[in-house]
Length: 110
Image (cartoon, rainbow, N blue to C red; front, side, top):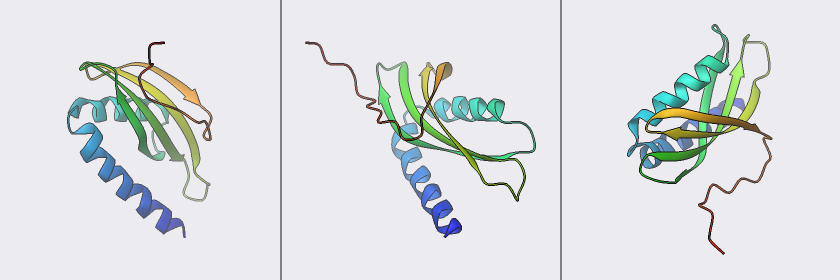
């Protein structure tokens, strides 16, 4: 069961990376730099993009899940973040609850 979940997350990551990040190749670098700085050396981690929204050609909002395991016998610890990436560099990050309902769509004028 654990391997099935890992396989499904891997497939969804691959599909999302081709659709969401192909226009912004430096975004994956910014995300990987953020996650690697977040978790200590020696830990095993991966990240998955839930959703993205492009605010302008230079700005993108990323809804990101991370999972880390420091020791092989430990259960993974999951976290969720909203990231603002501007011109390929991480500008801001906010940790949010795992079950939060996030709408990464542009605000509409009233």
